[in-house]
Image 1 (cartoon, rainbow, N blue to C red):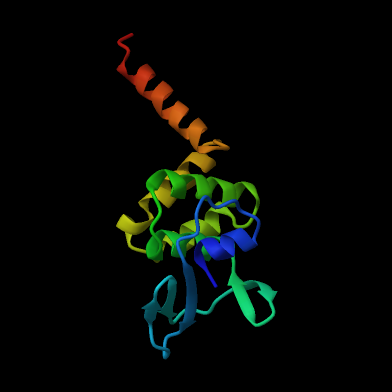
Image 2: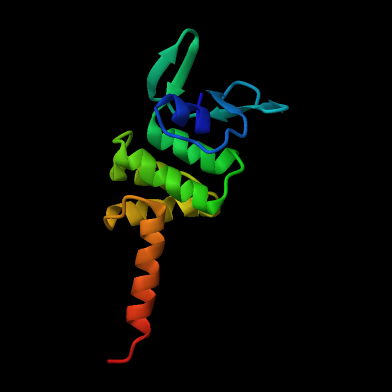
Length: 142
């Protein structure tokens, strides 16, 4: 499993679960039934957790998949990104590598959360405050 279900399994508080996303081998058939989605991949999966027959991917993959396959707002994805990085569920380098494999439009909010974390922010409100302060400083004429 991947997406917010996998992130929840890893201990990240997700405000809402929009469905369950399973990653299957490329030879499988991608399909969706109600809130369950099967997506194909040619990439090898890093399994970090198991619960009976269910396996869960790591933080970087789960976060990127949530951005691409699930319906989340920009603010929510930024918050999830910072939370995943704070908890050490992935590194900025691994997340960046994962994001380069995804469509920019789908993961732009994750990129923004990554940038905020790397700049030292520990929450989305802190990122917003920095933007406000930086904008106020930039608009002043010295």
